Structure formats: structure tokens, C-alpha cells
Length: 368
Image (tube, rainbow, N blue to C red; front, top):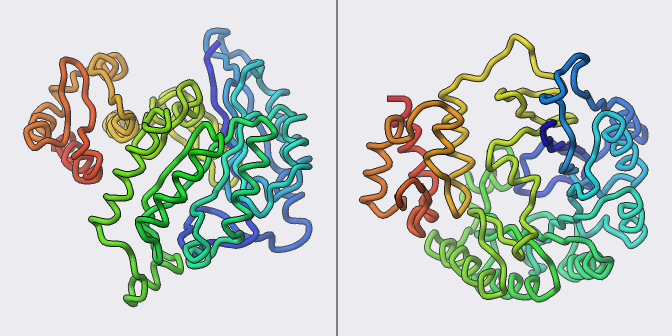
């Protein structure tokens, strides 16, 4: 049997934040949440699937939206459907994303009772001015209280932070990061703000009313985060993620190493049998272009700070990384963006500051 991760998309939020372009919204009527969960199906392995191609589940991730916005019985119902469709390992990592304004002690107790063992809290900032500009539904003290609740309840706790946000100074970001690292969390994600089309921030940006930190200040924040997490005993294992060793997000590692996962819900996508698809079941006649998969490999595995091994590339595709990307990779290495050591390919610190440039050059090399 093969391991499988399951992602469950829950599109409900108390409100949209000013930077958010995810598929999420406040419920449109009192019955929408119940209808949504009633319609969620968990497709199992097809009848007649050979034993060696069947799956067991070792990670589940409830994302959104804000899963903690809905009542816990809905989460429990989905987990029941998953356990009915697949064997779930005793040590499965089961994560739920939460926002501070909707996380309570009672919900944490309910999550524990249904087998959830990891909580990911959208803190984003511990500066009230920055939180208000982002349009968050909580203040800094509410975020602190939520983190304290989760940690004291014994959950494997992760926090999200955003840097490069309007109204944000280096001191604001670094102080908040240091505080969180001292609160007993096991994992932290630190993301540079992205201006996405269709969001309030995008409109402000187009009209010149979005005062963002400079690129130099943005990079200063990122470099501080990389140094701070290491100083706190965390391992910086992915471009924007660090964890106490042994507490890396097992579910997200499936994305970054092209392992199989099944997406359930409105905006969920899946990768199974070497194919990417939306919805619960792949098209038996569908396929994913091999160059698209090679592109995915580069985009995902290169995000890991350890990079990847050229032999892994050959094992997956039956072609040489050097043949497909060698010229571009050598040029990027000469420019100080990639480290090529034996069979290993990884970003350098300079490459981490220019990930889009590196990816673009590699992908264009494949297309040529």
C-alpha cells in the first residue's frame, strides 16, 4: 500500500482580509455550511485496485478559508468519512488551520478528541497597526492568547507570519517573530506579502496608496527570520518554513517532494498516479504532460533548503537533469544563485533572494 495525504478545503471565513485571493468567503446564508459539508465526498481506491496500488492515509490537512470558523462537528464528520474510505495510521499528522478570533479552548478539546494533533495559527503579525491595515479580524493580544492556548493544550503548534506588509517596520516584524519563537511553538512559516489581483491591496497598489517596505527592507526581514529561527534551534528546511527538528510539516513535504495527495472540497487539487487534477477522482483517460511534471519537480523540490538529488530526478523521469537543465543550471551557479555539489542542486542564499528569477531561467531552458 502507498501513503496518501488528504487536503480538505473549507472555504468559510469571518471576512476576507485585504491581501487574500484564496477561495474563501463569509457564509451567505445560515444553511450554507451544513450544505457544504453534507456534499463533501471522500473517494476511496477504485474497486479492483491491486493491493500494491491501494493507499493508507498518514497526513490530513484542513485548510481554507478558516477551518476553525466552523463548528468542530463538521471537522469530525469529514474525518469519519476519511477513516471509512482509507486506513489511517496511528501516528498520522492531522492539521487544522485556525485564526485567533475563532480558536477556543472548547474547540481545541474537540479537535483532540477527534484525532487532530497539529494546529496552524494565522497570526500574521503581533503589531495592531499592521493587523488593522491587513484587515485581520483579531488583534495582537488575541493572537498571543490563541498561541498560548494551543501550546498549553499540548498541540504541535505552528504559526504564520507575513513580512513586507504596509505599515510594517523591521522592528515590528523582528520583535513579533522573536516573541513567537519564545512561546513554545514547534513550527513557523514566514511569507513575504504578495499583491494579488482583485484584492483590496491590489487596488490600493494600482492607485499608489499602498506604502510597502522597500525591497531592501523586505530582504532584511527575511534574512533576520532565517537567522532568528536557526538561533532558536529551528531547522530552516524550506524557503519560508522552519521547525524544531522532527516537527517539519509532513503534509506540506508531500507537496514539496511530489508525493501523492488527494484534495477534497471546493478549491482542492490532487496529485495521484503521476497526474494532477481538480475534484475527487482523476479522469482515467487524462494525463499530465511530462514537461509540466518536470517543471513541478523544479518548482517544488528546489524550495527545500537541502535542494534535491539529480538521481531522484532521473528515477522519476528517466532523463538526466543535466541534459534538461544543465546549461541554465551551470549559468545560475556561476552567477551565485545555485549550489551544484556532486549530484546535489540547491539554492544559495543569493538564490533564495531571487527565487522567481532562478525558476524562470530553469523553466525557459526546458521549454527551449
